[in-house]
Image 1 (cartoon, rainbow, N blue to C red):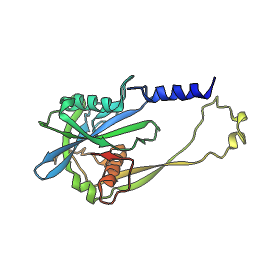
Image 2 (cartoon, rainbow, N blue to C red):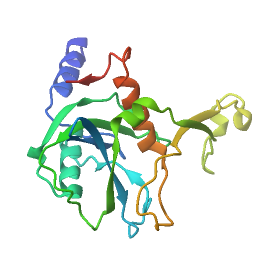
Image 3 (cartoon, one colour):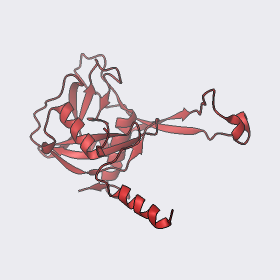
Image 4 (cartoon, one colour):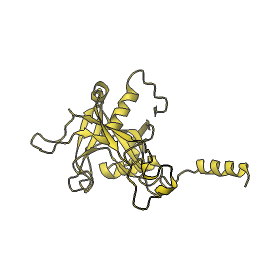
Amino acid sequence: MKSQYIRECLERENQRGSRDYPPGASAVLIPILEEADTLQILLEVRSFRLRSQPGELCFPGGRIEKGETPLAAALRETGEELLISPASIRILGALPVTTGPSLAPLYVFAGLLTDYRGTFSEEEVEYIMKVDLQYFLNHEPEHHRVILESRMDSSFPFDLIPGGKDYPWRQKTYDIPFYRDIRAGKAADPQRPVLWGMTARVLDQFARVLRPGSNDTNTTLA
């Protein structure tokens, strides 16, 4: 095997129109609405009938299917959840890839919705809410730290690493932001969700990019 062969294989891999992404890789869309002189962020409240994170605030999105690009996944999921055509979404750009506690990559796109009528799939969405983008530009979330521990299964080969079971594993931490003042739902709804976790993290990152003087050169928002 020669180095030229390695080069050709890597170039061919990078030129593929789509590829298989790591297990658990997901893509979401930050939906934006133009209303009068404001830009509104559209958020979903997940259906209370869902097994995973019912009643929590989120963006439309989901797992990237085999052979699908992150952008195609974000458009497909948004179309399914908001009952709109992907053609009615004008992509403005993408944020840098981020990860959650599972370390699976999350691809985030921002898109302007045109002619949106407030529709959504009742199977996945309980209701929707809008928050003025300016709120996130003017408010910082509060941050709380979670400590992640390394736990090995019973078959882990401790005898193959220096120190065995006493190996000094590096302690990992994970930051979780909260927008405490954001609430959704009717006044009588006792389960009004707080904006926190990955959705809050994405919005915090988005706001940092949009604030004047941002130095984030890895982000493209046309």
